[in-house]
Length: 152
Length: 137
Image (cartoon, rainbow over all chains, first blue to last red):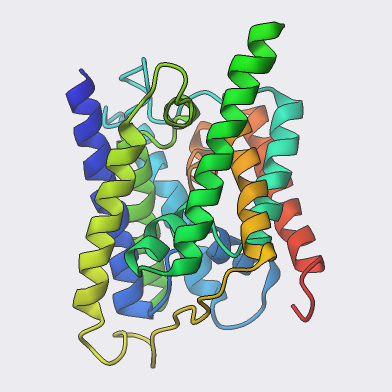
């Protein structure tokens, strides 16, 4: 059922694009998750209410699907699930979370801010950042899966 | 009204991540694993999102201002610097190790697990550290 997976991917992508369009059209802001959430936690001021509401919406999307029992998820190898199992253990996750936070903080954006909104704006900084994080992530997976695991 | 706009945008984003399968780290790592059994789903997600956002932005930018705020707030810089590229590289390592970027990690919280909890806590710690390392912020 690979075609169904692709269709769900594209449909989900369109919903993400509609979310970014809505945020720009109503509030004039970029739908960058790292900026919205780190701003919510570490900045004071008038942006806090909509950022908090965005966080609640972000969590309640998958949450409502799980509560309602709707089988709309696209987890590989488990058609009934909405959220997939974590790929690594606690130590790896501790390091990974720190790197993702530090990197998206210093690099001013993540997959949504640079990858979706930045590419759609044709921003040269976002194009460069997206190329770097995708290629480095591919290299990381190659080393972790095919060199370290393979030799162990 | 602004909070409602934020909630609706977040809800659409969360539904999009769940329906597309981006709340499954195995799919994301499957896309990044170009030397293995490659999973192309993320290409469709990013493609659908970028095309929709590209068209949507051009539509809403026909107005001189957003509906609920006085002006559009867009990044203006176009230069590349070490901070941007180094940050993107650090993020890439963490993304490859975990299969989580910030959106999918937070959207996966309804399916709470210990590894996810640890990831989100250290994600916030990383954001804090990046602000400490940013002069004038």
